[in-house]
Image 1 (spheres, rainbow, N blue to C red):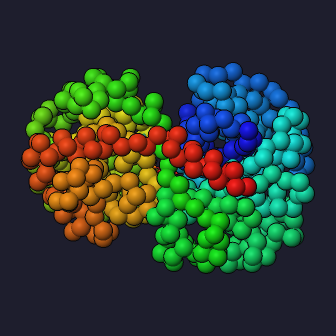
Image 2 (image 1 turned 135 degrees about the vertical axis):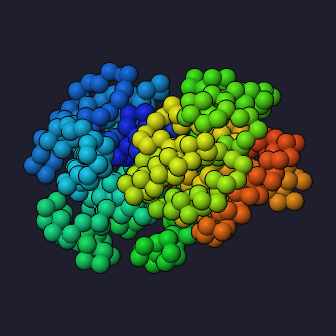
Image 3 (image 1 turned 30 degrees about the horizontal axis):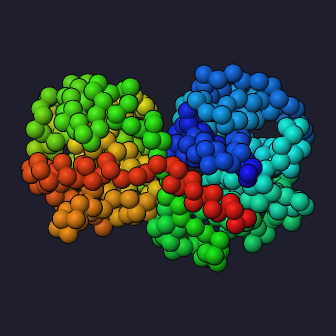
Length: 477
Ligand code: ADP
Ligand code: GLC
């Protein structure tokens, strides 16, 4: 039985800002189900939410800091979670990356370097937890120093580094090296140095035994200049060790048949009940309750990655079409204001909810007809998967995981019942508008539309499928 230590800055349902938390909350229990002994380690943020008890486990000293390790369980599972307790860094309101006001933490490098150091102590069985993993599985830049530090140890566990997003690299001024007390051996161009900066992500990309990312298409894309942000050379140099494994979804939490957040649960045999969620949604966001008008939805961090600017460019024309548009998101203040302005000028057609709202997210997936994901890049993307499960037809740009998981509605794929959505190529207003119009056309043929919905609902995006691929990777190490 492989013993795996999972390291992450966010884990659902303890704390979440995006898909990283979803993955780190679902993959460990799925691996456990396959027989692995998986434990998680993450910071003990003030905003952690849990129904489970939290116990004191041990105390250690790293880099002259006295840290407690607390233990809890991932709610509803048997997965042990260790919390790195250092109040001077983590006992503040806010999320893992920004404070209460939305400003990035000024000591992010120190916060996540501490997480990495404690993870290394635990990985080497020096955390007084009486457990040594065979594999340390790190996620995104916040954990990048773990493979780097471990490379200096003898008799160390193997390391896997998963890239959830190359756009976030954890780059800091080079003086950070001194501040963090990083050993000299790690500081060079083939190490943690990147164009004169201190790079957390390079710790993972250079020193991990294997690198994974969250879709096969993204694994190829990041080896090109457009998606590699200067690290494409390193990634293609390591391509033998790099693999793309598509994310799964938490099939219990995102299940239209048992979803407690929606008014009338449904499945592929009772699809007509989706209509009830649609009316409830329209009423909730104060749009006209109209069963024949298709509802387009978008749930997202409002950042450039997600193609929000393309949506904004499309809105003047889109809002003249016979549809409604409901958006839930938060992020860039300029996008937020522009979207609010459109909604205010078109109260019968568009609704915007700013903020983070898990319940509304479920109601949107259940009640909408179409889901928009015009991302400029998307390592995997989860909402297009949730959408397919809920009979909500996605419109996506052909990139990363979106390209790997949505099959465009074309004559052939409609004919052989593989079509699950609408895919467009160019990151332009024109290409997105064309996809929106194509979806409206097919929506006007109810028989065709229902077939698209059913094709998506029948696809298997369970974690078990992906977990088996991770398991196979662990076996090689
Ligand atoms: P990313 O991790 O890049 O943000 P993903 O598609 O992988 O993109 O995952 C986003 C996750 O965050 C999904 O579970 C989505 O429902 C959720 N999410 C994003 N914004 C919000 C919001 N404003 N309210 C509720 N859930 C949100
Ligand atoms: C990142 C990516 C997203 C992916 C998620 C989980 O945040 O932007 O595409 O689904 O990580 O892997």
